[in-house]
Image (cartoon, rainbow, N blue to C red; front, side, top):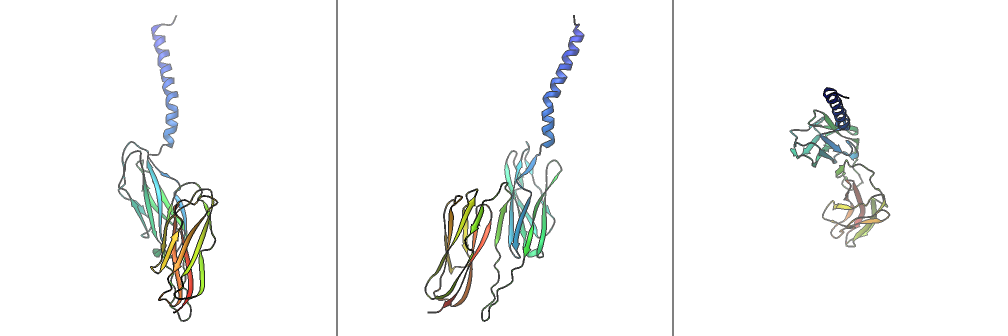
Length: 264
């Protein structure tokens, strides 16, 4: 027959084993616990032309029970700036926008970083890397040089593949056009999947160019259209105009139309 002392010893051992087994999963989870984490990739690739402004949106989540205060985000270059909220409340998601000014870096491959310090005294590197090239002016005898107009490129770090798209054409030459006949053409984009895409911005380079586009989602297997028209009334000689197109997934494209206007 067990004594009271033996019973108490057995009870103590059982309680200790129960505690250890019940806390083991928690201890394992604690090793992987991140008070603040980046949702998606920390490295984003981009190809740009010299003069373009590049923005990358990084989503962050505060998993802790305390508000996350961001005093500053340092960068490795004066060409990079981070835009962020000073406070990310507990259990919420916010964003950090890292802006790269390609005017301030030499052409070629590059890697630029911003550094986010987390509450557990770790540093997350937010990296933009890729290639910058120079677009030379187009020079034709008797005309002013056509200089590349920089664009604004906005990307995000979301995980998962982007839909594959294919433009049927990205530039159109009207040849010779008699004023005041309208110079009008359509650019078509095919969504090869797997996700829907949508035009969120179609912006002509000047008031003399009129543009219209497909509204709403373009499903996989469908086509979207951007209509570009140049007002030839009052114009003469060679012209080249650009239309900027932004998709909802952050990709930016530049369409162009060219031609020669014969005056009235």
